Image 1 (tube, rainbow, N blue to C red):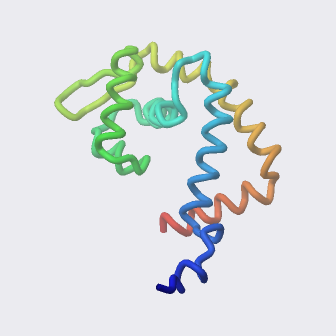
Image 2: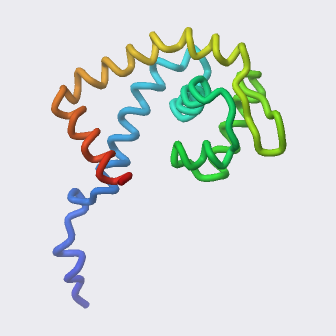
Length: 138
């Protein structure tokens, strides 16, 4: 039996594979910086959104950060357990004062992680990521 598709196939050209590898590499950098604060990069993204919006529905959050319902729910539960956010209704969430202080104090740590990534990808890499993001979300 011949496997012509396998012979012609080059997995290194897979866009999804490249994106997932970039995500894992950047997540590892964030994980290193955020570990002492016991928060993941996904949870921090939610905290950043909440610090700006202050209150929103879980559906609004899910649509804004492109997280599936189960992933969002798991991350929100962990943030609620830490009293960084709380529910104000069946599907409504709000950042707490402790949550606002947490975000205020973690921004310099986030900036260190961002600087480490920027050193690796350079200005052109950052611009390219912004271009790809804008194109894919349009």
